[in-house]
Image 1 (cartoon, rainbow, N blue to C red):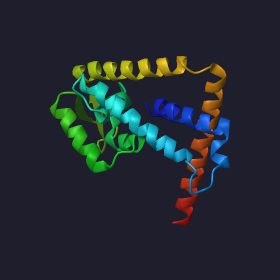
Image 2 (image 1 turned 45 degrees about the horizontal axis):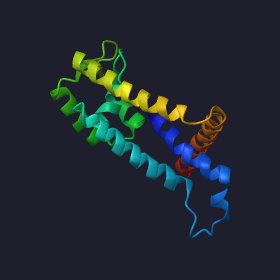
Image 3 (image 1 turned 45 degrees about the vertical axis):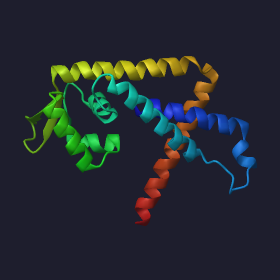
Image 4 (image 1 turned 90 degrees about the vertical axis):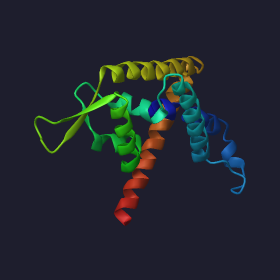
Length: 174
C-alpha cells in the first residue's frame, strides 16, 4: 500500500523533475518535492477513506489488514511499518479485535510475543482492501507510459535512499 501511495506521489515528482520547473523558481516561490508528496498523500488518504467507508472499515484498519500475514505478526512490527504511534495502533487493534477482524495469540516459540492473526471476517475485509488498492494501482499504472514508470521507480528509489541517509545522519548527530 505504501508503494502504491509513493508511486502516485512520485508521478508528480517525475513531472516536476522532467520539466525542471522547480529549478527556475525563486526559493520563496519554489514548490518542493515534499509538498507534492504530502499533498498527494492526503488526497490518497481521503480517496481511500471514502472508498473504505463503503465496507465499514477505515484506512488505518485497511492498512493493518494488509500487513497481517497467515503466520501472524507481532504488533510491535506493525507500528513502524505503518508509521503509527503506539497508542493509536493499540486503540485501533483493540477496536479491530472487538469488531471480530483480528485475534491475538501468544507466540508458541517465544511466550513474550503476542501475534496478531486475521479472523475469517478479517480475511474477507483484507480481500476487499487488497482489491480496492490493486484496482486503483492497475488503473493508475495503465494511464502512465512504461518508460515514465521506469523513471518513476528510479526516482522513488533515490528519494527513499536519500531520506534513509538523512535519517541515519540525524540519528548519528543525536
